[in-house]
Image (cartoon, rainbow, N blue to C red; front, top):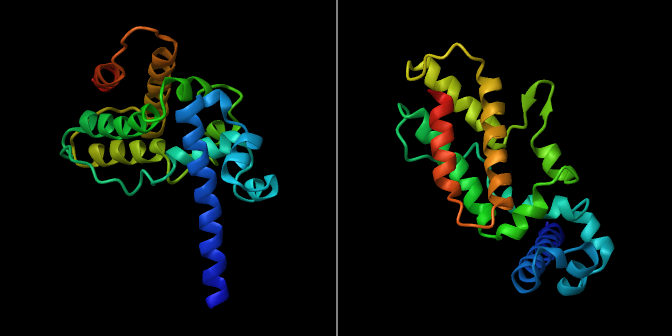
Length: 195
């Protein structure tokens, strides 16, 4: 039992080293400086150790936003305010992205990011359980059941559409050189879409 606990502690320490080194690299040199080799060097670990925890750079970056499950997040907006609840969920996600800067978002939101594509995909017609899309679908279903939202549209499709809208807003933010208010854009477009 002690050996198992030691092993788990060492594994968590190695994973923390990788994440901490990546964050330090992003803050010091920007997202372009992040690659497997530079992360391993900064963390003082071998590439084999890196690949034990992460498939590639994209998988590592995805782990930053997957720290907590959207299924478990408690919302402050009342159940009767579907748009407010969905805006709150996407604000949590976007604020996490923003904490790493615009360059992170530019690099992270690309068609080449296989980890993000897997995260935002479906399995047997369902969103992955811990994702924001699954939580938004649940929120829509609950709002319909409780009479707060009377749309005949399919909750699964609505959730996918809302995710596409927010991805477009994030893309616009990443492209825009001026002060683009990503939070206002999310709020405005989610409210319009749901009404």
